[in-house]
Image (tube, rainbow, N blue to C red; front, side, top):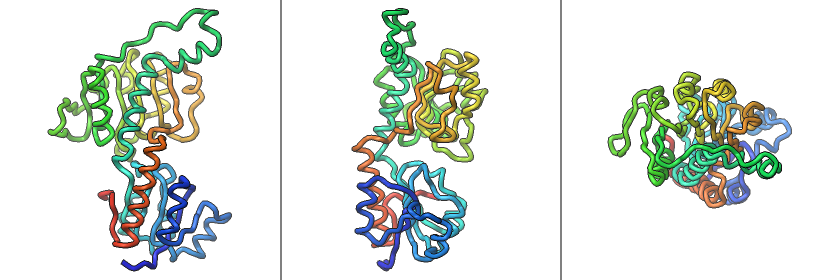
Length: 316
């Protein structure tokens, strides 16, 4: 593989990653350019590698503006913000950072579930406001252990979440396009039926056109006034307007949300609802996991510039 490579960094990256990239080959930072269109027009044919993140992504215009682009290396497991049709059309290779974030995302999912169901954050606010001595303790919440857990998605992260839930003596079922015969849990072909059955529905599937608003008003209604939704996947999987309506109409017990449809914007109705826990997309945000993600991006870039391949290629 020729060493005549150059990296285009699409957006700000964690310092441990950004600081080490120049040791692999020259780097230009697109987000630093005052006029990005003019910058690309002047330097378009220089770049063979594009570095981005799962949330920033890469649209068709950017991909098409780089005629010599051969590889995109993304920091994050999700790649729904990258135009895959443009990637396929150009024959560009794509890598992400799978597996290294499974544990931390699963931990957060269980934490969100317990928080939302037991009202931990709401009770914390109750005490801090001085409401405990003034109006008494909060109302009794719902038990977590021994309940029925529905998983929307049972990939790498979903399986780790399910294993965590086994420790809480939960009955587990899951919905995916097709069953995995190697898994010990019951596959439910209908998401609506799964929502009717479970007490808690955890969203852990990829964001894509196929999963857009998969958690619809009908699914939320089936989950019911005693049911809880947890989303650690992508905001696009849940119909956010339907979620707001279900919560305000008493059709849903509560929700724990790490992701939203139009991040970083969060609907005011969710912010003021005491039965909703909101987080700023921090599923993988631990020092250990972010370091592992950065290291995996570096390994992918190094593999490409030296051997023309990738360590964790996405199967397109």
